[in-house]
Length: 397
Image (cartoon, rainbow, N blue to C red; front, side, top):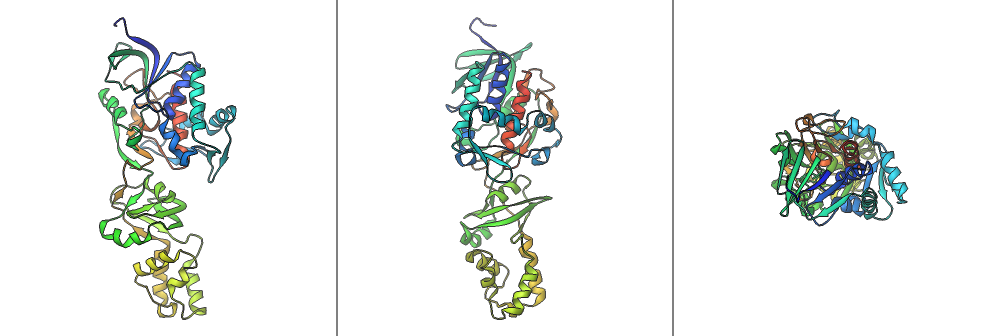
């Protein structure tokens, strides 16, 4: 080892949610810790999350909210560092927060409060943070990892990869973590953009573009998963929370189903109105439960544009109702990593210890957070995985 090598117990590559949690935990164990962040900003994704208020966890977290080739892998970390444990940190730093809906917890003020809390904890634990540092090369010599950065050499016994996925490259997302895994012979589950909007086929876009800006309360299904929240029509397809949730389970070629009136037996309702309001056009009746533009669109889409209820046979109304509750669309693709909130897939969990996040083949090498093949639903679950996996590694590095 050269004379000018800077030696640490732990080097964490990536200054996001998981990296910061791991570093502060290790630092509080009196480990000498360095965080290397390749951008000039620490915690960039934290700052933009939750509309700038950071949906930092969810009151109800289980493995059921996560997608992975091994659905059991996340259980160990999630059980040992729970939402209540992170809430303890938040309360300790006197950050005010609230439950928005479905157990989602947000800061009352701004996401910066959560980032300030993590940085303060790192400072208390004597964690060193370097911004704008990218490892040019990584090698392992005996029990130590050696990193070359800016003409300097660093060494450590524990190297933690917390570089995230490919989502939102403008914030600095790269494939660095996957490249390190490949270098050390670890397998990767194919990655896809997830928690992302859908793009429809070009032949449908012109027709659908008239709906841009309309939001509806729906149930969106993909495979066996169902989500009751809003969808939002865009000039290219579908967005909104329910669509984003469905994208986590969607693969190219799959269809999605949308229940457009989840609180109503539409067939019984249409029959009742057919008896009472003979001359009422069906699009005008549906305007009572949908925005007018959508009512007109959906009736045109189903070939019932100017028909009155009386003109429509009961069996036609029944078929129409089935489409209301199971409107089937086959998206062309998702919008992509530029807008996706997370990256599905990543380092194969078979390569890692579920207790410590250490690579089974490479002692001292750890992978945490989004870079791993554990992806949560919308609603604070991905942050909770970042905290839990970072905590788990932080106890042993």
